[in-house]
Amino acid sequence: MKVGIINEKLDNRVAIVPDLVKRLIAEGNEVIAEKGCGASALFSDKVYEESGAVLESRADVLSSAELICSIMPLDKDDYKQLPTEAIVISSYQPYNSLVKTKEAADYKLTVFSMDMIPRITLAQAMDVLSSMASIAGYKAVILAANHLPKYFPMLTTAAGSIPPAKVLVMGAGVAGLQAVATAKRLGSVVQAFDTRTAAKEEVESLGAKFVEVEGATDDKAAGGYAVEQTEEYKQKQRQRIFDEAVKSDVIITTAQLRGKPAPILITKEMVEKMRNGSVIVDIASSTGGNCEITEDEKTVVKHGVTIIGNSELAADVPNHASQLFSKNVHNFIKIFLKDGKAEIDMENEILKSSCITSNGEILFGK
Image 1 (cartoon, rainbow, N blue to C red):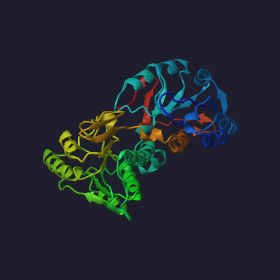
Image 2: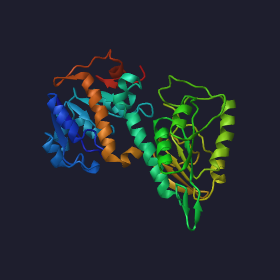
Image 3: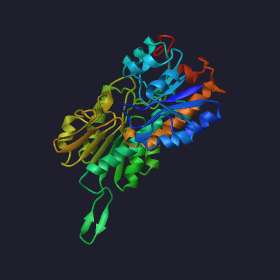
């Protein structure tokens, strides 16, 4: 099987790192890589060549690869150059938009979307959502610390004592828990909120306080995503969050509803009551944001509060993010790639869930 690696046009990561190239070749495959594909993630062409990859132009990679791996979905120009029997592995996020999925179906390609892999125990080693969310949670706190005009830890000096920063994390999934852990390591006082009561133990195990609101609907089958709550609960939630938000120096928001706009947790009124210089980092900005006045892919200052809308923070840590993404991809490929040949069993739960197009048919949602 010829496995192709391309240079991401809108991302600093690369889908397959040199270490994975060695493994793929040892497993009976060939690897062809676009020149410069790993440069933004600090993997040179020389390292790819030393790992056994053949460096080619983008056109040559696309036209000869039987399996293409990418971080972001391919575009129409790429599809035109691919063999019709090619397999594409990427993250198409069909829950948010079917445009890219429809384009792939038009060219009768078999596409596996890594973000569609079921979040089950058997697939944990392939879970790119968790891998990237962990990095995003870490980076969100570092970003907040850079913008906050205060120390994070408590300091006692000859000139007086500095109190620790107060950090509120909204959503205690993978990203939220990593944010909690990172904020604690930086010495701040951390609180975390989540509608899932099961998150309380995890939050407290990291040394943070769990902000609890009674009456939440807990759906353990939601795959790690938040679920819709009753209006009565939302009212109590808004008041409790308001009380905590206005006292916080930093708020990290991570709550997302799969296939729906992100829930508004921080309203304009809350932002107006926050202290000047406070920082909000909204990881859910690509689906509308948890803060009412977040602007996706922008950093703005409103009412004296810096609001950072960025759902692609993992791309800002491209070296390690690429390594983790690669491992997830390799674990996924091993399901169907045997001795250099693709044996796709659509009865396999993981393959069935993640295959979004095949032979011109859109499988997502069926």
